[in-house]
Image (tube, rainbow, N blue to C red; front, side, top):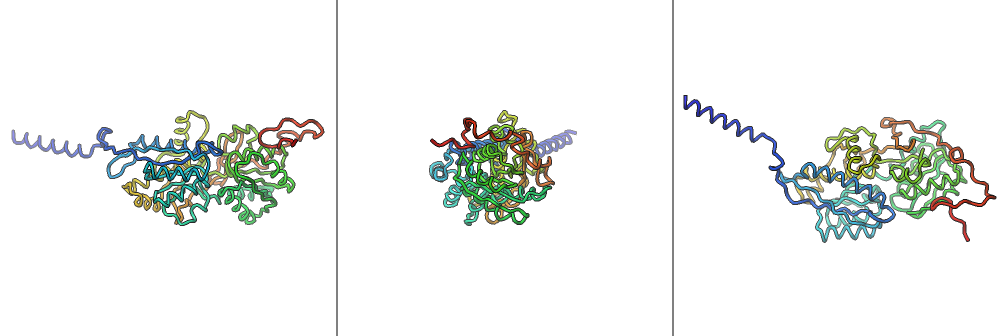
Length: 436
């Protein structure tokens, strides 16, 4: 009996030992390594600081999530991420300089990109020269990726896609619009978007009757839009950024322009656009990298609705995240997944993992072509309806129908004032002040 008891005790001890081997590790048992420092040059000041702030929100959301899940795991060791932001002042040359400083002085092994294609192009060259994996999150100009870089990857759909969806949507409208006015800032991203419109419009039966560039960062576009008005376009397109989109819309109202569609590449998807323009923001369309209304089923991270709730909670806001926020979070996810797939912090191994990455996230599919572009993710068209963004194209992703044609400015704001009366004081954008 005693020997049986001893045997039973031994068996029980062995079973408990085996069970212990299969029990999940408690937080105290996790092996933590040093923090993983990641460099982020970003427009914290300057003309693109609004967009830069949105990108920072996206990066911070990702950092919160990954650190809340014990960091990035490499060979069984968990590393929390530490984002080191450096202000590039919305200037490409400054961005390149601070990117080099991040690599040389702080020895960052990885980089997440700045806002804007000009800064991204400058930083990408520095990253490539130093063999540092670089994830572009808000730089979509295809020229960045056409240089044969091996360490540069962009999670966004390319610039050429930004307004193509708007043109496809327009071609489906009844009655169909026929003429287009194309205005563009002169930065690389905006010019690529504009060129794509010029090339694509004839394919869907639309004629570009006006095409004009203006200096990037312009806050007064009255003269350019007044010239476009003479062509009586059905569609007015702007390729630029937030400040120019606001200026464009104010000038359109001041001129009582009668277009049926107004669509801007960047701006309407940000809360600042609606806050600046109020009801005048309604009916404007934009191409968007992401919408909170998409229904992707992610294999990592959280779903689009959960992402929206996480954003609102962290930043104590009722606004939904703009696509610039989502772009940045997606970049962080791509880097995280590549590091864990490589099971290494070595630059070349992580670079190779990025090149073979193919995942579905809340942002959509992230997969890179041979140039490092994410050509596998579709864009959507959004329209501001009653002060809120609605996804209206493509039809299979739409949550609302597009409001078309846009109600005229005369119907919305009344006719132009009698020119014989004294002119009212004009705003900072829109009608230019009288010359003295």
